[in-house]
Image 1 (tube, rainbow, N blue to C red):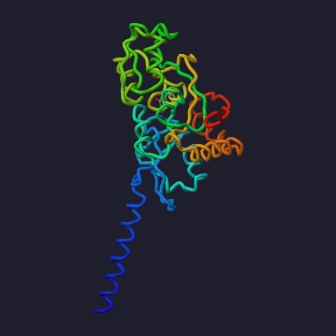
Image 2 (image 1 turned 90 degrees about the vertical axis):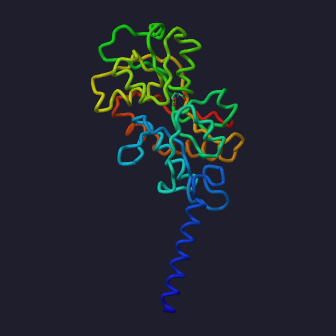
Amino acid sequence: MKLFKAGAAAAVAVVLSLTATACGGGSGSAGDGGTAGGGKDKIVIGIKFDQPGLGLKTPDGKFTGFDVDVATYVAKELGYQPDQIEFKQAVSAERENLISNGDVKLVVATYTINDKRKAKVDFAGPYFLAHQDLLVRADDTSITKAEDLNKKNLCSVTGSTSAQNVKTKLAPDANLLEQGGYSECLTGLENKTVDALTTDNSILAGFAAQEKNKGKFKLVGLKLSDEPYGIGLKKGDKELQTKVNAALKKMVEDGSWQKAVDANLGPAGYKAEPAPQITEGS
Ligand code: GLU
């Protein structure tokens, strides 16, 4: 009986300590997208879940893409192993909120650095340079430049730079449909409710190359903007910004950056620009 009691007590102790660990490492219980204090249980990172080649959650629950590799490398430099990373979906319009609320520590999600966003968050980087382009159905010959979009049904994503560029300068008379994510736009393009999808060429190339989309779509091949991707982090966190910048620099210098580009964007035939100079925080 005594033995049994001791065993039960030990079991309770184990359960309690497990619970404590779970709480401590919970989804940023300290409101900073990670664990406060000295513990380094977990880091929460916002990525895209529906962008092949960049940030994709596969049906078996794995995460793949260039942004995932960048996030994993940076996390390691910050002291977190891959199994200590929790990836959280960060749709375009929610990225600033996720960071300011402390739901995530970092956002690595095709996140263009710009002044409007810098009013709310800080960035490290840039670590990649993309350009806005258009995706149309493979047999379309009516859209070859941005102005051709006027009066056409165009899809982009709420809170993205591409949607903003269309409205303010590229094609103000386009009939712009804004969706929550790019995969929704792709469905519209396929079933002809929209005539074109606009966002970064890196994202469009990934969609066009997907097995299920082969032969259905084509990139128009325009460079309608510069989209330097940064890693979003809490405004004013200079220490984190410096560490993330150092990690990005190391990733380029040791060849891991090029490897990640080739592995994730190569299969789509995407010709990536060289790694950009880091400008944030200096
Ligand atoms: N890079 C652009 C942006 O940050 C478009 C891609 C996206 O929505 O993630 O808005």
